[in-house]
Structures are given as C-alpha cells and as structure tokens.
Length: 130
Image (tube, rainbow, N blue to C red):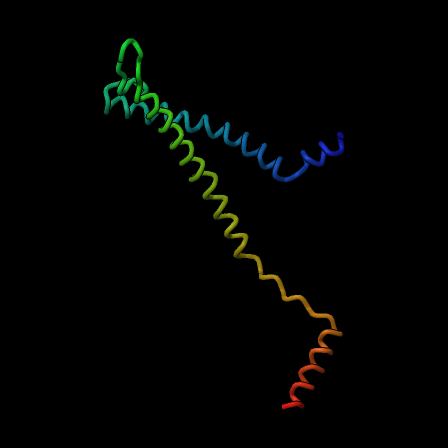
C-alpha cells in the first residue's frame, strides 16, 4: 500500500499540480494587491463607492440585492485568469515552443537488412517482368 502511494506521489503530474497550487496561491496575493491598490480605487473614483460590492445595491421587501457583489467576483476572476495567462501560461508556452524548435525530427527507422534485401529482389523481379 505504501509503495503504491509512493509511486502515485512521484508521478510528474502530481508534483506539477502541487507546484501549480503553490504558485497560484502566491500569484493570488499579487493579484489581490493589484486589485486593492489600483483597480478598486479606480472603481471608487468612477462610481463614487469605496469598492465594487456597493455598486448597484437595492432592497426589495427587506431583501438586499447587490449587482456589484457579482461584478466584483467576475472582475476578480478575470484579473486572476488574465494574470495567470499572461505571466505563467504564455511564457511557458513560448518556452515549450522554443524547446520544440531546437529539436530535430526523429530519424526514420532503419529497416532490417533482410527486409532491404527482399525489397531489392522484389524490385528486380518486377523490372524483369516489364
């Protein structure tokens, strides 16, 4: 049982996933700083509210609705997704593209000498018939 668990942990995709989670968590703090330091003050200047969650709030029969709360979640998602794409995914794709460009194509497999001989005999017999 422990051997199977060790093999599972040592697979490349599990380690990649763990690294991705750690990088994603660290990157989320960077995006939160961008959001809190630049985007929310900009929104406050445009809409006159301290943050997006206060925009578009209204009450109906004692229930409070907030369009801004939904917009805030969408904005946070888009900022994190764009940041991950432009700072992690796109550079990794470029790196993989560079690596692929540097690789030479696989050489064609060399056929067995017996197959080469039989192919030559076939070609000679075919040429004799015509």
